Length: 223
Image 1 (tube, helix red, strand yellow):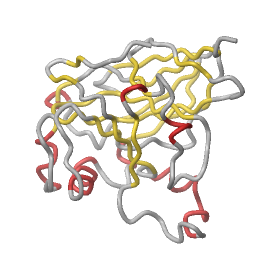
Image 2 (spheres, rainbow, N blue to C red; image 1 turned 120 degrees about the vertical axis):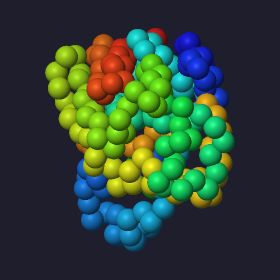
Image 3 (cartoon, rainbow, N blue to C red; image 1 turned 180 degrees about the vertical axis):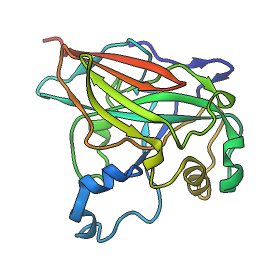
């Protein structure tokens, strides 16, 4: 599985962070479960997870559907590429820390609970295809981007970053309040729900205006 590292003009660090439940549709899908034990309330701070280096893949790279798994979820996200060390950012200037943007396909084995994402479900080899890098100057407003997911050419999801619980600047400020993001890190802002599902032999495409199209074929695990 090729590992996508070089993204001009920055080299990706190999670390991709993701924000769970940061799209309003994801909270709606969780429903009343968010207010019951063990959660008792909707998140008051960002809920983060990792997509480590082994998950990275590029446009067109096949993703293996593990044996015994019927379907995978396609988590279509806007990815923020960090351009300089980001610590305790102010929301109104947080975008200045970005080098640019790319499409992230947060592939997962369907699982729960949402507040404690399973490493084995989200960190399989190749489970994080990344699209082409687009400089920050090319996107006028990252909080007003349409996101479309097509499975075998059929539209399965249409959403917008305007529906984020924490807009891009706020998310960056909240995350860097307690941790430093480094140049080349990627922060996926959160996927809409319900995430489209795919089976082996199907093909997913994620489209975001200005960022292009990220295509991912899914193949069965060899016997």
